[in-house]
Image 1: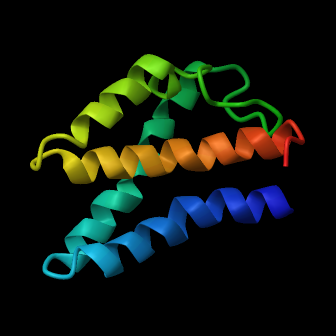
Image 2: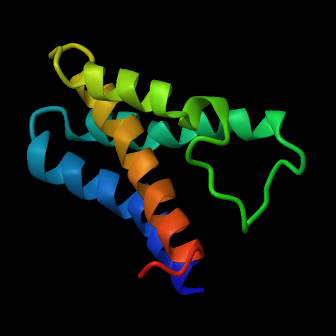
Image 3: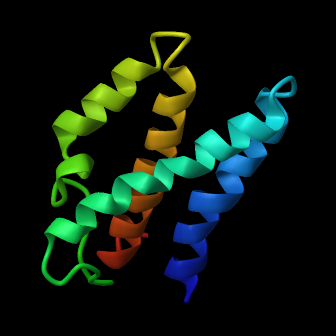
Length: 106
């Protein structure tokens, strides 16, 4: 249950907090974009089973690979794509924390 709350807290509470704290002019739009980072989970449809609570997504699903994460980091360097990079990296952070908790490293 702890893993569930941490994982989904990062997926939903962190984007809202970042939107409220750092994007005051376009707060609602920013929050929607930041929350939309969860859409990269569409790549779970390529896995069998689609959802496995005991599987680490990092470097397993195509949009969660290290190459993809590198692209998400690169998005941070351009003002027009920065918010998308932040959204995607928040998602990766949530999954990374989940992997560590799954493996009992914390």
